[in-house]
Amino acid sequence: MSSIAALLPALPALGWAVHARWLHGRLTTARRDPLTGLWTRDAFTRRARRLLRDPRAVVVLADVDHFKQVNDRHGHAAGDVLLATVAARLAHGTTPGVAGRLGGDEFAAVVIDRDGTMPDRLHTLARVLARPVDTAPDLHTTVSLGWVRAGDHPGEDLSALLRRADEAMYAAKRSGRSGPRRAHLGRLLGSVAGRRPGRRGAA
Figure (spheres, rainbow, N blue to C red):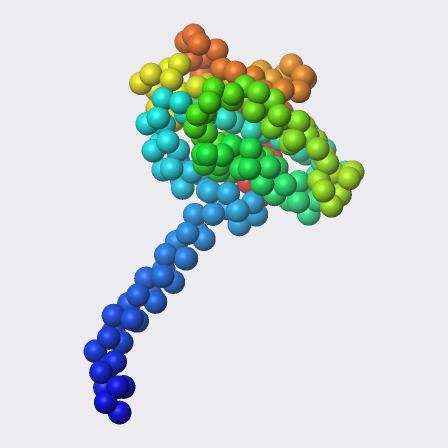
């Protein structure tokens, strides 16, 4: 009885610790996209802004090509499998950094380019993203990539850098050529979001 009595004062603190751990888990889950496991837009934005303090940071925008046709041909369940596969490959190919799902078939990442090899890494990533899903050889498509180096545009925030990456990605999509496209160094032309054909709403 004496040992139990000695533990009683600690029970409230233990209860709060358990509750805090549970609450932290719930909040973390809420910040993750349920389909892909990537950060949601808001959670990605907070983490990306911290990474952009590093001048070696690179912003990458990725958009799945012909996603509507994939859904029409294979069904939405297969489309979800493709999105999850793209997300996993993107997250693996953009470390050290942070990756998020902005909505639908659009993803973003901020990567620290420690050794200056980002162009080669993104060309490799584009090839990896175009591979068939491991469990479904018929399920595959290309992914258009646009990217911008934060150090090339000092003073621009995440929103502006994402617009530059968006312009580059859309140019890559229009060209019909596989491979990432780097943002231009001149004036920001303005976002082209909403002008891409075949966009899909958030899944």
